[in-house]
Image (cartoon, rainbow, N blue to C red; front, top):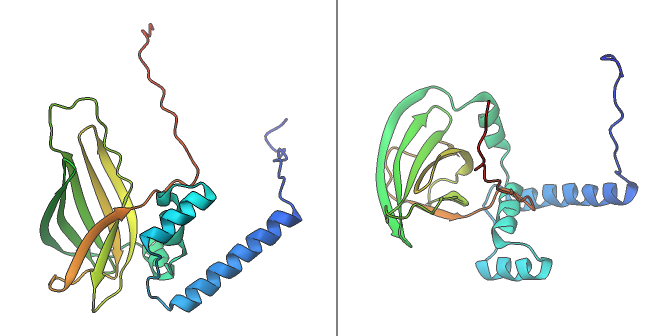
Length: 204
């Protein structure tokens, strides 16, 4: 096959799947119209029941519902960027849950969005057989403002990791009446990563 030729990619898409996709799109649009920008989220008991009924993990359902929230404004922020950096806002909140220390350290305050930084560390430094994998999403509660939040990257390994969250509009410089939580959220829907251990001698 020459460079100018195109390979036909197999596509088993059919009318039945197309009809389902159209229903999903229509229901997604209707849900966003009903929410009118308000975060609508089921109780944990409901998510657990759905997970059992449809043989899914609760975090998979949570991630799917998070994607159904109205995020049109956030898409523009992601595409155009958060804007110029205005200042750095110290937050310095921390909590310890099940031998892990969580620190919400600071926010980079940009023109159109904030980038919040979270550090996570396993407290038992003698454990060398652990690797932290954070399936978490930031939630911000405020009586005066609704925020749209996306994962904005993570790094680390072993007993510590760091996460960043893109928040729009920017959080206020005064945090009176603003509460922060990390909630379970799994980004991969039905996708599993298989680990391959590379422990063989390699000669060159």
